[in-house]
Image 1: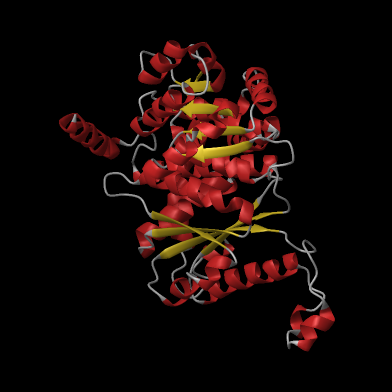
Image 2: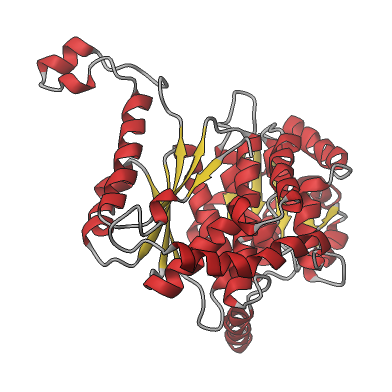
Amino acid sequence: MQNYVQSVALCYADNIAGMGVGRDELEAELSLLNHAVADTRYADAELAAVFNSARSRDDLANLHAFAEDWRNRFSRIVVFGIGGSSLGARTVLALKPRQSGDPEIVISDNLDSSGVADLLDPAGLSETGFLVISKSGGTAETLSQAIAAISSLRQVTSHSSLRDHVICMAEAGDNPLRKLATKIGAPVIDHDPNLGGRFSVLSTAILPALFRGMNAEALRDGALEVIEACLATESAANFAPSMGAAVNVALQKNRGLNQAVIKVYHDRMHGFGLWHRQLWAESLGKSGFGTTPINAVGPVDQHSQLQLYLDGPVDKFFTVLAFNHAGLGPKVDSSFAAEIGLDYLGDKQIGDIVGAMQRATIETLAKRGRPVRTLSMQKLDEATLGALFMHFMLETVFSAKLWGVNPFGQPAVEESKILARHYLSETK
């Protein structure tokens, strides 16, 4: 695949001294996945919805129209959503910094009383649009924010104008968010009922990226390249996501590596680690299975976590998203560097320094017997990000196959939601 290259060479026991996986152990997992990879040609409803989110193009005209209208009318756009409804949007938006003339985009995903109050200050509401996303249409955190926003909007605009400030996104049916939209006359964008929030980043939930003027077609094209490679492969060993799943599961089963670290070497990819953390944890943490995802950013976390990674418990599998930083960024003045005893930095560009640290971290982890998988990219753009989204969604699905769990749904979380509603009812 042209957008990224995966290497698991530093995961094999015969390449690193320590906790590497045996080739026979890995082969055992891959053999179990051969049927799973082949079965993607006949995907069930949930996986078919993931594929369709990358294949679809007929929804983009409507989404572009909403985006163009709001880019022209509002100086600020607030996105209400939580979990998969916000983490994917954060990740995509980080790819393209705000330009002059772009509306400010605020993703309000954590229900915080003072934060919501500040956000709904009447002073800026007349130039604010609210996108409300809830797949089920009943997410309590999101609905409470939306109702509070509408109440605040009523202080600065007429009832007939409320609909011009709100777009809702939910699956079809008799759910609270659709009722709210009907009450104020706001438009509703359909959310595929078979597409869970954490798998929805490429779907209609791509709308926040269009508010920033990003290339949604390229984002989906990158994901589609991974899907096409999946459908064309005849062996799990020859497809990066199934190989990644096999390595993750083999290391957990045979070496007890119960933590999965994803380390990214790009500021604009910080959100990707958070998106992956939810995807991995909520999809696989079931019936006693799964590993704990940990997100890290380089070089900063080399000064906060690397000591533990290198010299602490040997219980982690590392994935490094490695970028080609060579020749990028400002240059360090050689004479100034020499005057303060840092000759080795002279005439180096900031990207050269980041690249050296990236390489050193990978090699040091391997020398300490810590298995390291790399996904290397020459550039970071919409197509590359789309490919990474689909890689890890499929890697998660294949890992679920090996652990024997259903990657879709989150049944254990429902108990907490029910109890929270009970407490609120008691208070009322």
